[in-house]
Length: 352
Ligand SMILES: [Ca+2]
Image (tube, rainbow, N blue to C red; front, side, top):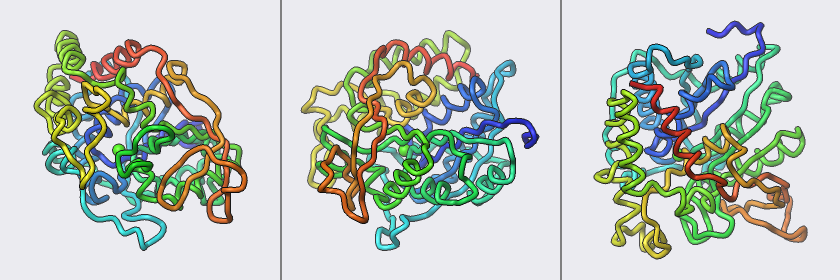
């Protein structure tokens, strides 16, 4: 365990693996030693139940232990299990996203692990009792757990930034016309997080699908071939194989994005209509915004969320006692897509 008397900087990843979560977590862990002394990953519901995403998180942990290059410096990693449903119990979570994520939410990828999941309170207790420890938090799934963390009085001063993948401002949503999947799961939790960030002066950055679904960030067939070959050239054959399973052109994930026939409920996703030519790796984009903000156009915006999980710019008169106005940072564009993919390959090549 990290000595708690040194100034430990934690990266807390709230995640529901999930294909794009898997790519983001593998990348973040390889990248993290540049900025962080420890990674604490918390499994949350979303792409599947917390029980299943917890198993998937341990699979990722096993892969990272097994495949890490011997000369790569990785921070310490710990794994936790988070909330199983929204703060509002009426929004009970059920179901999964196998239609896009494949079997078990991670294209059937499974490894047995010697590690175990601890309850998420353990990491909050550790942060609270360690005088010099601070955390940067990123959320790649339902935001419930983050609301629980931030609401704790003993977390005051501990959380230095919050980055959330979720929401749509001006594009069609992937849950309903105006709502994105992650934020649909727990709108009340998001409102609590925004209020806490306001009152405690914590920088909050939203990474909406306006950015993550930009065609110029799409993992096209050509882009994947490049990534696959580049990993092989660098001796990362096992990681190349894992990427092929998760996001290669035969994967459920890739096919979901490029097939014009895919439907979700009675809606047809917009990808074919907007000439989208590859898979959107949403959570990887959020992770890179957090790791490399200089490569993105990030603007302040005054927004509000509503009880359906819609988030957008709003007028004063629309605010009410349950949902208020908040000034947040929103990542709206990428400056250099080449740098985005180069960084991704650089980090993933720290695995065998
Ligand atoms: Ca996710």
